[in-house]
Image 1 (cartoon, one colour):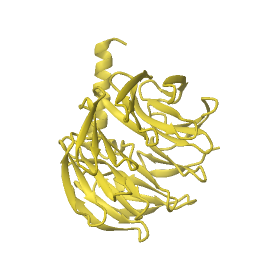
Image 2 (cartoon, rainbow, N blue to C red; image 1 turned 60 degrees about the vertical axis):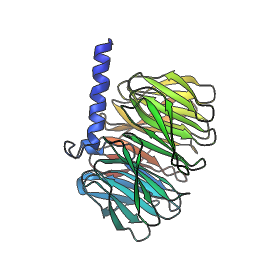
Image 3 (cartoon, one colour; image 1 turned 30 degrees about the vertical axis):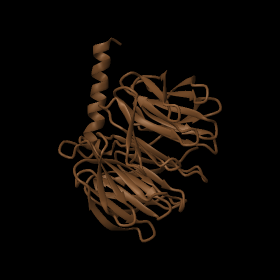
Length: 350
């Protein structure tokens, strides 16, 4: 592939993804393409998934195949959970708000006006703070979980957010920002780690103080040692868009959107173990550490690839109606949940 075509593909993908954060131009189908569209509450075993066509978040109780619907704001695109307070936070892109849901009552207790283009959010359950991106601006919104009071921080246009609760750090990625921005919750200071342009997906290892970032423009994974400030890059397949870590094996799995593959990486050695062919236009990924299974959502194929983490090969491909793009595993049972272009659902794994 020559450089002009490659660049066009990357920018086309970027425009497609970033359109999900633009309330003026995104339609209901593209507005679903958010990796944070589904979340798990480890305290209750419940799974929450957004349903933008219904302006709702769907709740799957532990072990249930059907879901309860909670109406939220317009165009919900992302959800996050505080297991300590049993509150669920939903970013409503079209209405510029965050819905606060009481998990016990299964009802919205507050609707917070956070400004334009809330796209992704993350919770620090230790500090009880919620961090919300106002994409296409240089701001993020910080919500106090006790009072629902808000403050704004200049942190760049964040398209991805991860929280390291042990260190009190918030990691912020922007597609057009060459830096990983690191917010210190206590001091409010922001430090920068230069990674490169066109970052998209992110995962972390809080014990090793490591952050892993997919570089969709250069087809690489950046491995960032936060303690040392080192950045190491590893070649992946075409347009890496998501990354997940198996804490049991220490392996990383990178989803290559245009490569129709998954790159398995030894995080300790920083080396590629295998490249695994999956379905067409994969996007979402979830890891079942207990069973050493990796699930990949093939959006264009309407299927999920099941990878055996020990053998690094696909052992089955499960048809899923409605184009799945975000996945979540319930750890104790291994039940797999998906958000699709149609609706959230439970996937039966053979």
